[in-house]
Image (cartoon, rainbow, N blue to C red; front, side, top):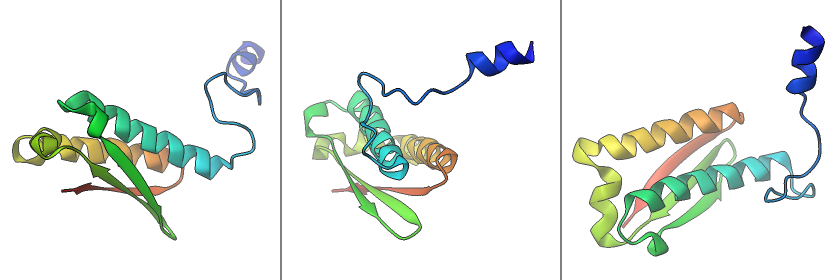
Length: 109
């Protein structure tokens, strides 16, 4: 039974068809995945998904994600009493922690 478990969950080094290339470091790949994650969530919340932009600033210990959206969509990102942005930040923080990093999400106006 243990052999079956280890074979089934064994990670192979083959690149995924839509994934990042092997030339990219694991840290850069995880930053890119986190950026895509924030962008995906934001685009599904707003009325103007084509205007969603996520920029990253790499710090020494922390990655800062700057989210800019259309002015009419800022309320949708923040949510009632800030619940939506708090949930997005919680998801980002826990996902970044799985990659061994710290992340901060800022909304630009």
